[in-house]
Amino acid sequence: MSGSRLIGRLIESLRCLPGVGPRSAQRMAYHLLEHNRDGGRQLAEILTLAMDQVGNCDACRTLSETQTCAICANPRRDRSKLCVVETPADVQALEQSTGFQGLYFVLLGHLSPLDGVGPEQLGLELLEARLASGEVAELIIATNPTVEGEATAHFVSELARVHGVAATRIAHGVPMGGELEYIDSGTLSHAFASRREV
Image (cartoon, rainbow, N blue to C red; front, side, top):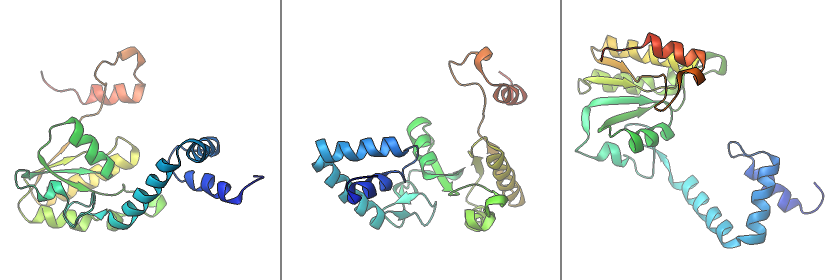
């Protein structure tokens, strides 16, 4: 890029965000520089604070500013129900949508041998210790409906079975308001195979 090396570095830095290509990064950079320098400074300040102060909860591994996150620290949560998810964003989605009052365990990924991600990288020894404690009665598996997510769900359900904990899997299938003729065949097949009594 001709012109300022600093602007070029800003554009390149913005590209680290998911879904942000060169054109989007350039638009963001020029917007901040031309129209919202205060917003840019505030963004830089909060990014620095978040990078320095946000870590993982010791109990569930979600993102937290404290050693134990607010969910795990809440005595009103049902400790007999533990929901396993892949990412902290999944915790946020479930909290906003479901009314679930149990606890979570965040894998921070999924099993992927080709990428070198095995049980050790997912903290499954920590999950196994929680299952062995006798406190968990139901393990709700909410991994993504991908090949890796399904393999992870199977592995986690086997851990639960070894410790005598009931394992359930969230349902996948036709979305509310969806019309069957527009649903892809894989989703429709899974929904049909997972039908339940009404």
